Image (tube, rainbow, N blue to C red):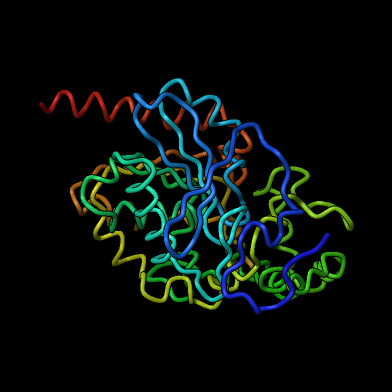
Length: 336
């Protein structure tokens, strides 16, 4: 296995680390968005309403593959690899919410060419929130924030614990032992260091948040981690990812209805550390801000569910978002 080992190239294309990829159930396509080439997959009839699926940190588009099969009779589905993940261009020093959001604005404009429902998990859910606030008028019809760490992925949030009180140490571990663009690549060393460098409370939380088997083995790196630039996580822990995108200000500008799914979470009573994506207090603040814009906020709690509802239980994920979408459509029709 080989990985890029220097910063000699400003941007790293899929061909730079082509040996890591494996085939999937849908054909993959690439669009040139100017600064990057974005990889994506499409399924469903073009005559159906469009839905954009935005993966979580470390997740490539194919994390949605099972959900895509269940959604394809109701929507035309576009699932993407964000920059720095999967086969899309990796861009050293160029990872932020504003940059990710701008990529997707161009993707919708050039590829989808009609309004979408934007659905994102985790960091992808924060990017869905960005789109629901800042995308050009008419691009986004509604948004799904799937266990999105709003406030909790900031270094200095307006409410509740920060990323440094949550999953931040894990991102630091990846960056330290794997290196930006996998320039170090010491996965075995990272595994050995995990018990020393990651607090016990976080390891317990990750076992509840992540599906079984996602940790890999001392020699077999999980495929999703192979397709991920560890500089991503460092950008969030350092604050670079959100330097110009305060979540409180962003949510005050949401322009569409929102569905929020909230999964396993708790606050450790001894340390105050967050186990999960975000706290109940943080979700309540998200609700207050979205509803203050005049848009609806629908909350669905799944307290026993791992972080990825669409990955762990795609049938429940699809049933949840389609029931909400149907209710929105009915409400819209009744208002006419």
